[in-house]
Length: 273
Image (cartoon, rainbow, N blue to C red; front, top):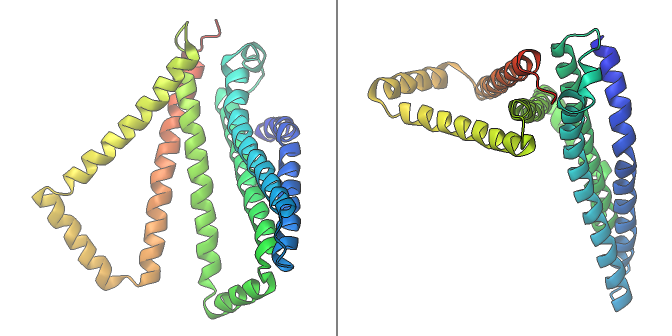
């Protein structure tokens, strides 16, 4: 059932943002061509500067539009279908609230991840067009590094996982805030914004408290002992792996907490007034 929900959500979301993805790549290609011609032939005139400036403005506007639209899709798709008028239909489906939340979180993460990839591709297109970046040379150097140390591939995959979990954590943070906001009968959007701010203030406060605890004698001595032990028994690669596992663990804990908050509120305190 989660797969069906994801497919439906994905079709709707892609239909809304795919045009902007294409527009961003097209505008980056236009900027690359205009800027590349001026750079290659060392041609500078009022017309070429105007065209380059215009292409840059268009690209910047489309990039901002994509970022805003991606965030709006993430927020509004969840708000309208879970807490708005569409909620009457969504919550009558023969599927658990948990499955609905998971499907929306998965699709939202995919949309934001693809948007980030499209943005990076557009920057790469501009870089190739204007600065004539040697892509084959870059891939050659990268392949040499991979041959020298194949663990680079594993580390790259781990970084991608860290980024994806970070995106999912941010999405669930928004979902939890929206769920708290819908408890109120009035000013739900404003209350959701306040809830989002409050959640992040609490997280920041917890981080500060944890940092302060590290200065306590016993805790400080314990951390120092652990650090010495890790330095003696772990290689640089092992320490990197431990750091990645720690970051992923922290992200997973936050995702779990935000999911529990969202699911409990929407399943027990749902207010569609």
